[in-house]
Length: 254
Ligand SMILES: NC(=O)c1ccc[n+]([C@@H]2O[C@H](COP(=O)([O-])OP(=O)(O)OC[C@H]3O[C@@H](n4cnc5c(N)ncnc54)[C@H](O)[C@@H]3O)[C@@H](O)[C@H]2O)c1
Image (cartoon, rainbow, N blue to C red; front, side, top):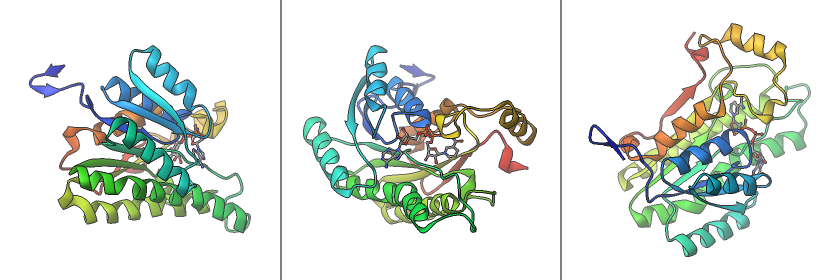
């Protein structure tokens, strides 16, 4: 499909691997990525089968693969399997992540710190490492990592989470600069507060607080982030790399 000469089905013919595709932002991104024409490899430790099934029901292309992003061997197996069955991985969207409920200097434990850094920072590193050789050999590739506004500014209760998300931003810039001349683009999406299971139920109190703090006057929806990821995975972003895209209804603009 075209609009004024611009491609609308921007991801036609591309294969995109998405982590965290079993819930929230990852699931919405998987559905939007498939709607834009890509074949989606929906990965997670739970919920990814349902996501792939929903995409297939909608007439899109998808398959589900179990992938714990902290497991380097699992990354190797999944990437090898996808390459041998599809021959390509054009895009990687690292979306899986966790938060911790006791995440301050006084309350965070060493185990909690290691777990959070392991999933939220080491996970995306292992993912990029697993796909980069293929992308370099193919002569193109797009990687989108997920940070958070907590990786940009100070917030209460997110000590290790902020460290991980700030690390994701720094690491993404490094990889972007390293491989820009080889036509691999690496960018970061930094969501504000988004309505997903990560927050449990959105209580009326949280809704009121977010509305009061956000110029847009609402909580974000997973699709608000998914649409940004689709743009960053597509040809319209060929000259965009090493950047952080904050999607927060204007919250950090204040
Ligand atoms: N929801 C928000 O307000 C918000 C704000 C800023 C950033 N984010 C980031 O967005 C991303 C998605 O969050 P969400 O809100 O959709 O959360 P979510 O809890 O709905 O989904 C996260 C998914 O990650 C998966 N996951 C967790 N650990 C994993 C592992 N080791 N291996 C593979 N998968 C694993 C979970 O199974 C789950 O399906 C996260 O990186 C999160 O930090 C979310």
